[in-house]
Length: 243
Image (cartoon, rainbow, N blue to C red; front, side, top):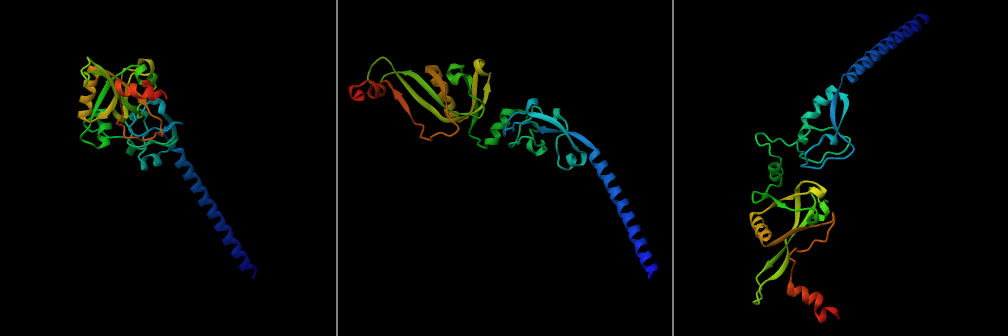
């Protein structure tokens, strides 16, 4: 009876020792796994929008296990990411995965890549020269939505020498890029149809082009709005308008 108890105690002791040894090995292996850390590229506190050029200020470097970086195709060098264009939104505090970056192959033109993402072969990129005053104090940014407005001097239909007309030439146009910044803004780039480009070119020769910045949530209308001298007088200066 005592011998049986002794045998069981011995077995339990041996099993306990083996379990402890196995646990120790696993702990060591786990430490080795986590000690093999490599630097990887992470998004900083601000997320990065889709189709944006990545800047150094968008990124931070942290260390994670090497095997995780390899298995998940995470960028490990910041220089491989800076200047590239995102293919999707990258949340803050997340690694930069290789499938989140546009691959240009032979075409390294970022603007052309942005146009291609719109997936409309009938559009072109076109930059409209402007200045700080004509574009909301220079505060219009890439991805903002604007109305493109023309004010032109044209022949009068009633025989007078000339008259003026203001019209929204292109409603709800999304800004693709900004040339310059703030007080030094020089132009806004849009994705437009060739007809819209020609209309704007003519309007620039006959008058002025300006931009009305829209809020993030705007009331959608048909955009077909214009003002002539006659309609302006009828709305604001006629006797009926003042009643």
